[in-house]
Amino acid sequence: MSFPFFSKLRNKKAHIQAVKAELDKVRAVIAEQTEEFAPYVRDYMKTVCRGQGKMIRPGLVLLTAAATGGIKQDHITFAALLEMLHMASLIHDDVLDKADTRRDRPTPNALWGNELAVLLGDSLLAQAMVMGAGIGDAKFIRRMAISVRDLCEGEVEQSTRLWDMDMSRADYYELIRKKTATLFSMAMSGAAYIQGLDEEMTENLNRMGTLLGISYQIYDDCLDLTSNDEDAGKTLGTDAEKGKLTLPVFFLMESSSEDVADAVRSAVERHEEIDYSKLRGTDAFREAIQRSVEEGLTRNEEAREVLWMLPESPAREALAEMTYRLDEMLKDCMVD
Image 1 (cartoon, rainbow, N blue to C red):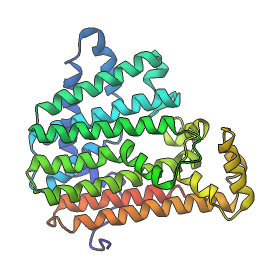
Image 2: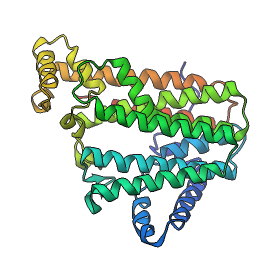
Image 3: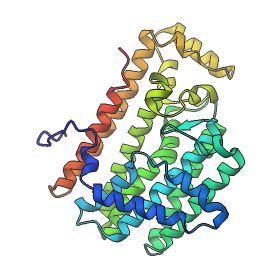
């Protein structure tokens, strides 16, 4: 079910403007947290935390809170720790992917080497957990800990299933649920839990976050094959080099073009990088990206279903705008 009554503002950051003042408070909390580290760690952390991105996950926390009764100070703190968890996961990702840039800045591993980068990511994750212990009860802390465990398990599985021809699309979806969608679902369900919503509504919002997170990872997988480093603001192509089986790769291996399907499967079986320069102009490549985009769009539509359960408000509209913006990002990956 769509939301025809929503304005669908063309401003790409319209959904974030609704909580701009609160996001500034989130950034201030993150800056304050860097002062909690020992002096010999503090400067590194200030550099790491300076590179905040689109603030999607904090935005989800704040918009969910605003749509369900109002933003509390605990929501601000929770949004900050969630962004810190996200930054920690990106530091580790960049080490694994040997990425040199992110958000047009050198990555920590490019600046200081892999060993220190990993330790900084660990330290940031630990500090986020310290913050979480000051927010909720034991049940909340357990939910948060399970989410962090899922995030780490997803990274472990991804790293150990490179070039894995036994991996199925169902496996892929479970992997990205853990490594990406878990922070989206944690954002929305955590905001609901802090708000004191009942278990049913909390789980509905958890499901919405999961759907959006999966859609976002599909977008990222498509972007890795269709964009370039300069436009994306980060190092691309690492998935192809490392043998990660992403959704477009699955669709290429299932292509009706036997030449393309055989070439991709053969490369994966031999643990060789797939030569996408030869595939990008083919109908099979365009179809693989299109089918992937459609999978993401379907999940965004399912996510919007949950919004009908919330009372009408500017925050609910902003959440819908967020999903429509993700629709546009996915469609931008389509190959002409």
